[in-house]
Length: 444
Image (cartoon, rainbow, N blue to C red; front, side, top):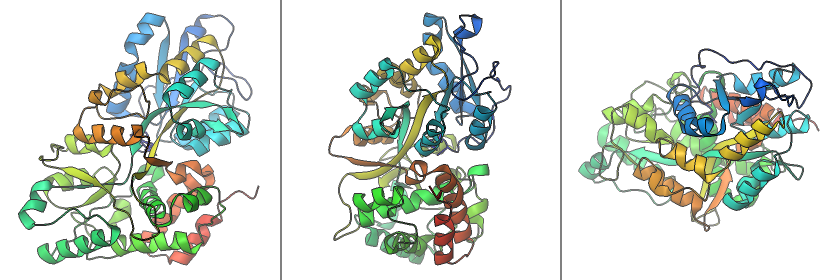
């Protein structure tokens, strides 16, 4: 997701749906959940949770709340789906909604709240959000002035992964500006005779999202927060020259066959390469550079690499643009928001726990993920890169912007934008792609 995405933090680590679906047992209209129907029966002690987080990550998620379940006598039944973005609306419309959903896109949560399917967050959740989350993060769960959801996990995007030893052996230096990054790309290609970058857009139904992350990083760094915020609100359309400029800058890398796709083939392999696969190419030395969020640490470890400043693989944040662009501690990121379809007591208790520092520390201590919860101890993170990412999120000087595609209406962010990135790297002219993406915006 964006697994969010993992979530997107894994929007898209959701590659295989979890076996053994637990379907909500009670039907009803909008705003009605499945497990907790408020009738005082046994189902009140079962809370169903639906999301994109799958496989090992789902196992760790369930482990993170296991002790709390036992202490509170509530059974949390988690169900993962790689079709979450489409199915959550179908289930809500059919009266088969879960009690809680882990939304990898605030824009999708806003869609569901606006349509009347979600219930406002209870006071205990609102208090946790006010105490432990920044105003920006609180805003991502707020729709028309009402808080509907609390943040869960988070990621810092825009990391560029590389091998410190390979850089040292070749005398390559970490770039401090976007122009230096482009110059470094040319230097690596010249020195090795091979493409420096490996890029994978593949992610099942979410194919294309890694490309949106690139564009978002460039828009924020090149044009600044005002343009970025206007873009999210469609006050700055995709057809605006400032957005086209971001595509042009990314194109200096992604559309140059001399620069991609290391370890996989030509430009045509960008779409067919799963977003997780380049971790293996990095560890094997088949590619030198890869752009991906902080959660990629876990993929590199799974591929047999050691992530450390003096280890096999390390990362630096995508550098900014000189002159009038956004500079300093300015980053994009992702995460999930937990929203409720019913207001039973047990559902509210689970929602409160998931918004707390107790849960954040429990999950982060199990490894592989981070949170923007201010009550999180960075030392619980499983790697140095994740500790750095937590430091960025908790630093009051940081300007953080949530992944733009996740904030846009799902028809754009999880629709025409994803598809547009696929068409673009497959050769469709930029102007045509931008017009097609813009056409996805709802008319009202």
